[in-house]
Length: 422
Image (cartoon, rainbow, N blue to C red; front, side):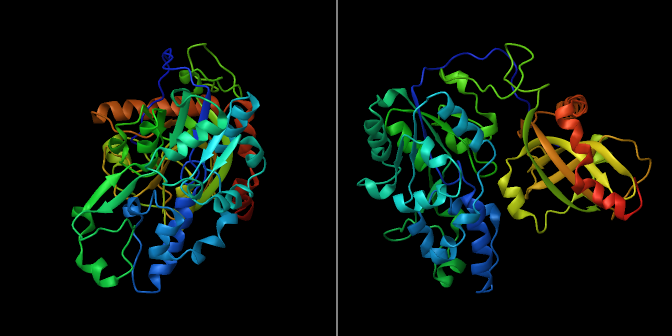
C-alpha cells in the first residue's frame, strides 16, 4: 500500500476566490471510463487491444476529436450511464449551498454538456453559468471560454478558481500533425511510435492560467502530476479539495476534532459505500515478505470500470470471507509508485490474524471511507510506517456507529449465509 498522507498542519490561506469554474469531463464526470470501455469494444472489432495505460492520448479531446478514433455514435448512447466522480456531488452541493457562484466550462458542445448533466439531480440548477466550446471562437487551451464565463458571472478573472483535469497530446513528427487521439489508419498506428512523437498539452490548465485565473489540477491519469507544474495546486481527487485554502467556505459535512484539521471524522472522510469482490489471488509476493503486511489481493480483471470511478489512495471498510466472517480492513487502490506498478491494483489488508492463507476463498469488500491520496515514499521504512498509521485510522474509525453498522451490509453477509457462517 504505497500511498501518502493528508497534511494536518494549520493551512495557510493562499488567495480569496469569489467564484469557481469547473471542467466537466474527467473532473466531475467519469467520461474517461466510458471512453475506455467503448475503445475496448471498438478496437476489439479490428483485432486491437486497448491499453488503458496510454489513455493520456485521449484525455482532453473534444467529442469530435475523439470521434476520429472511436465514433461519436459509440459514445452518445452511454451518456446516461456516466457516473459522477467521487467528491463531485459533495463539492457542487457545498458551493451552491454557500452561495458561491459556479460556472461549468467544457470543451464539449453546449448540447452535449446539457445532456450529460441532465442525468445528475440538481446539477443544472446549481451552475450560474454553463458554457460549451461551440459558444466561443476557440476552445481550450485558449482562455476565451473562461474569460467569457467570468464576463457572464460579472467577476474579475483574477478572482476565479478553476478546477481542471485534462491533458492533451499532439504528434510532433507528422507533416501537418493532426490533433487526434489515435490514428484511424491502422498502418499509421502500427508504424508510428506514439511514445516518441507526442507533445503534451494541458488545455484546461493552460487556458485557466492564460486567463490569469488560479488553477487547481486534478490529474485523471496515473503518474502524470509532473505535467501540471503550471497549476497553482495539484490534488489527487475532489475528495482532497480544501476550499478554505482559497478563501471559500470550508466543508461542514463532517465533525472537526481540532481547528487545524480538515473537517473529517477521526482523520477519515465518509464516502458513498461501494462494493467489490472475488476470489483471493496471489499478489506480487511483497505483502508479507517485503512489508510484513499480509494483503488479500483481488484480481482487477472485469473491474476496470469500477476502478476508473475511484481515485487512487487509501480507503477502509469491511471485508467478508465466506468461511471466516466479517472483519475490518484498510486497502490501497492505485499504481503503488514505490513499487512502480504498471496497472491499477486493489490490495486490502484484513485487520485480523487468520493464521493461515485463504487463497481462492470468496472475498467481498464494502468500502465506506477515504483516508488519503496515493504518492511515493523515499524509503521502505517510511512506507511501512505510514501503512501502520493507516491501520490505526481505519480501526478507530470503524468503531464509530456511522461506519460500524456497515459490518452487517447484505453484500457481505449473504456470502456467509450461503456457507453457513453466521
